[in-house]
Length: 465
Image (cartoon, rainbow, N blue to C red; front, side, top):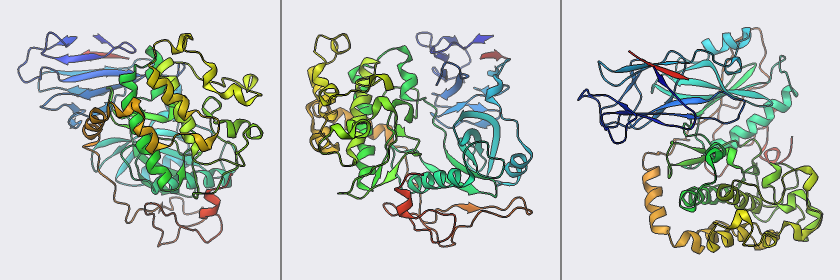
């Protein structure tokens, strides 16, 4: 019996210097698999993953896991290293919140939805309007995530129209983006009762979970910042502002420093036109720019621009390096004076700043500049000495982290309409000629849909055998 502990990796193989579980069979690689766990919240069930780090490969329930890839383990899964060495994952008391009891409609839909995907009963996360299930891409035999949003008569929260419109807006924005540092949306299917959004399953956890063991070092943080700047530069160039950047929404594709990271959760994202300003409130308090929290205090803030994303980036860098949040932590502590937002008030001898280099401090302060007109954007930030002096190494690491990424073919990408329940009438259908291309979103010209203008407006253990 091999026990899996939180925040402690298990490396299995023949290497006596590195492996915690030693196997002697010559067909097993010196380092074959790594078992690790990710905890998103204290009350949530740990997610246990198996990463193949071998040259010969591994099998999950008899199927290849894929070279140097990770799979999420479920109770009863069997991991095979070769013909003689395999492990069975045992999770004797899974949390009931992990599973979803299918209602009649959902059970009928998921079995008839598509022959190419299978949606499991394992729930990876829940939100106000839906939940994320573990699913399988049966064509490529790989795990994916499926976000299920209900908007039919059985919707528990909100209104059908609001739920439908919110997630169709999220789909349209994600469908227009094609970048290695942005979560890839592969398929969207809409039925009479639900929207199903299939995307990559990201197996390295989020940045927030990385902070459980303490703050990150500057060397660990630099590749993350570099990739976020790449993502923001691309998004803003294509007219999208995220509006809810925070460590929880930044996902790691692998359980290793320097791996590719991706931005997720585009539910708050909006389209914008350069030179124009947005007005609606959104985001997470600790990472909100002054022009969003107290616009009356910022002279230039008649609305806001994509500069809010760079303030949030500065707050994220601060959080990664100190494991604390700057400026605002609760509604009871919102600054009442403009100077209270200035990071200059944090002296260099403050506890959270002691071990941070002067260059990193300056980088954070120039992103968290109160006046958005003077705030650094991507080009200037990439030239800042904190990044610039490591640019060669960052570019090399970025090339290695993204070498296996391939852009998606968006030529014929559209929502697939499926009428599963013949007795029900769909809310509306999409036009046959619906297309999404980079930098351009379609206008919908019929009842119940969203125009481009509306898109910018508010609505365990292991057993060896």
